[in-house]
Length: 430
Image (cartoon, rainbow, N blue to C red):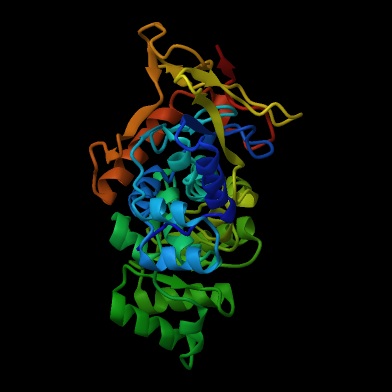
């Protein structure tokens, strides 16, 4: 399915006007970066890159797309003809998925002619702003959970396609499973889920509902115990399933108090191995507040798919370098108050040995030598229009998930504080 019209009107009119002025063929470099992190955050997480590469491969203007543009006279006939054969033929380099980013980090670099590169702006920002928002929030939740499993359960709080992207981003950041079956099919993410309150309510009693679920799923299932009275629900669950019941789920109440009471009750009934799953509008702060409670698994919905208050992370796509009429490369940059940025194509590095103190951004000769301990952050994703070493979706996701853990290990302990603070490491433009 074409992604060509998943864009803004002005992307097309810019191309049309630049072609008419003779500037559309100028070579150009665009970069994606954030001027700042969401308020109080210490780091951001890169996600969505491989989804974006797939979307760029589908960025084609077929008969239906061209007919729409012609009907509404959005571009000239000459540009319409050019769009009919559009294929991105440039180079895209970027930070690895799962990598961390900070203010000014050039997480994606797009090089090609102005007319072919500017067309991708909205598509690139649509994918990266959302996926990075989810991954960044999810990473904080994973740290707050202190090694206890988390399940992403936010599909009903997002657009149906965004829900799949959110599950992918959360898994990269360390979540253990998702409730979304399409995410499981497409990306190989483990899926989990048992029953909602409606399942209990459609039966004549809680006991009847529990017996039906056990009969279908076995005693290893998770029973939802707070449709009516929680204490009674625990008693009924163990009565029906026995002491080998897999887990109970709590979706309401004063969780620190309720969880402790349920744990004590389960233990007194002999169900000491039965786990407690907690849901109920959790976020990184409520998860952290349950660190001392006997919670075994967290289920997170709304907060993770909405970036925990930051549904977009403020990434921008800016032209930083272009050629002149003679072919000379010229640094360019927006200079307006509070929205300026350094011009020029950039490389970025971090120290690969132990704890990182700074991210070095070099806006100069990319061959500038650095100490051997520095690792480059930008790798080539598309070269001359061709995807470099394409991988299947599960492989990409698992690699990104592993890389995220490596990147986190480089940060100082202060990076994981949930209180508002400055970025964990500074970015220094050389």
